[in-house]
Length: 315
Ligand SMILES: NC(=O)c1ccc[n+]([C@@H]2O[C@H](COP(=O)([O-])OP(=O)(O)OC[C@H]3O[C@@H](n4cnc5c(N)ncnc54)[C@H](O)[C@@H]3O)[C@@H](O)[C@H]2O)c1
Image (cartoon, rainbow, N blue to C red):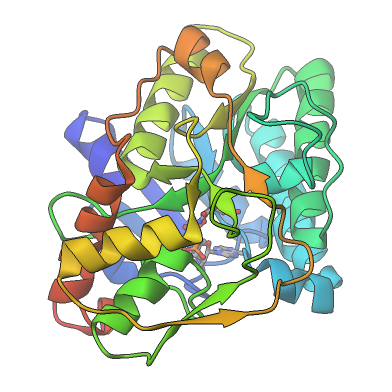
C-alpha cells in the first residue's frame, strides 16, 4: 500500500508497533514505530501532520488464537481502533478505510456471498471486525467520519517486484505454507478435511491478490476524497479454488513434488467462501488484475524463493 501511494505521489506515514510486521516491508515514506492504542503518540502524529485519510490495517489475524484468547483480539483490534477514531475526531480527520474480512459472515447462507447477507461471525477475530464496522456506521452519523470497510477474502500473492511478500509468524495461510514445503522448510502440507461437500472434498476459497487489494484501497480513498459517504465492499475474485487445486498449482509453478497429508477438519472452517464483488466492481470501478490463482501463486513463489527466511534475509 505504501509503495502504491508513494508511486501515486502521496505522502505517507506508517504507524506499526512491529508486533507482527517488518520495518523492511515499508519501502518508503515516514515510519513511526508505536502502538495504535497510545493516545499521546496519536495526538503527536495527528497534530503535527495534515492527514487526509487513515487506512487501518493493524490487527491480530489468527482465528484459532482469537478463540483461545479473545480479549487479546478485542483489545487490540477493536479497543485500540477506538483510540484511533477518537484521535481522528479530535483532530478533524474524517476519512477512514478499514481492512475488514470475510470472517464477518461466519458460515454463509449461500455463495457467492453478497454484502447484504447476515453477518454472524463464528470467532472473536470476525466479531472484533464486525464491531468496528458498526462503530464506523455510528461515527459517520454522529461525527461525520466517512469510512469504507473492505471485506477481504483470502489475501494472497506478493508484489510483482519480488521486494514485498508474506512473512507471518506463525504462518497460517495456505499458499505460503505450501511454498515452504516446496522450499523443504516443512515436510508436508496438511489438508484439513477431505469430506466437505465440494467437488474434491476440500474447502473452496476465493483468493485475491494483495496488489488488487491495494488498488481497491486507492479507489476507496478517491471515492472518500470526492465527498462520498463510503460503503462496505467485498473484495474477492468471485471464484472458489480448492485446497487440492492450490497445491496442484504450486506443484506446477515450483516444479516440486510437495508431499501432502490428509488431516481431520478444523472446527470453524466453512466449506465454501466465495465473494460476490459486484458492488466493488460497479461502485468503486474495481477490476482485479490477478484472476488466475496460478499467477497469484507465481508471484508468491518469486518472493519466497528470493527470501526463504522472509524479511530476515537481506533485501
Ligand atoms: N491476510 C488475509 O488473508 C486477510 C484477510 C482479511 C482481512 N485481513 C486484514 O488485513 C489486515 C492486514 O492483515 P495482514 O495479513 O497483512 O496481517 P499482518 O499481521 O501481516 O499485518 C498487521 C500489522 O499490524 C501491526 N499491528 C498489530 N497490532 C498493532 C497495534 N496495536 N499497533 C500498531 N501496529 C499493530 C503488526 O505489527 C503488523 O505489521 C488486518 O487488519 C487483517 O485483519 C487480512
